[in-house]
Image (tube, rainbow, N blue to C red; front, side, top):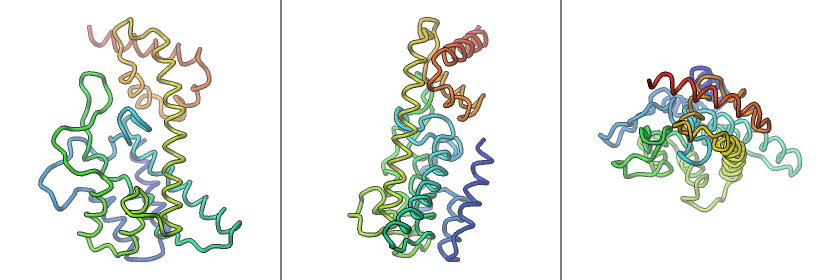
Length: 241
């Protein structure tokens, strides 16, 4: 799943017409290590959730969220231009969509107690500030720095591009979290905790094993979820013996 998502992200980035913005974005995706600190990430970018205990909290959730934000943002550009006659710079929208959360993976570690992920104890810089600092260090222009600053509210939103990516980010986070919470609630209702299984761990295993399409498709099918996660619980229990 992660390799195909990285390929899809690079395909989206290839649509950036401005060579400097495209090169900057590709450089960061290809080499996402922060250059201004000696602290190393504890997990890989492709493994990272978007937000532990919040939206897209499973393995690979950050990459899924990133692709979705970019696609939603481009769709919003088309709608707003058609309806309101405004012009929106798609190069900045794509770059900001792809980069806005990329340094979240520095913030997290695996949660051995509950399964899934948790905030790490020794990191000191939120991803929104980290990406602005890294883009500036790599020679990014004021235009992309401004849009990235606006997406997370570091600076007031004054550009169409900042607003579009901010909206796309919020839409995908809320949609993903809504479905995810329904599934986790049903996992807890299925009684797996009484059998010694951890709901968050099972959810993460299910995403890895079956993929997000299969798991999220069952969000409204409680019987299917009950069957799926009780089977996974049995597998986990048998491996632990």
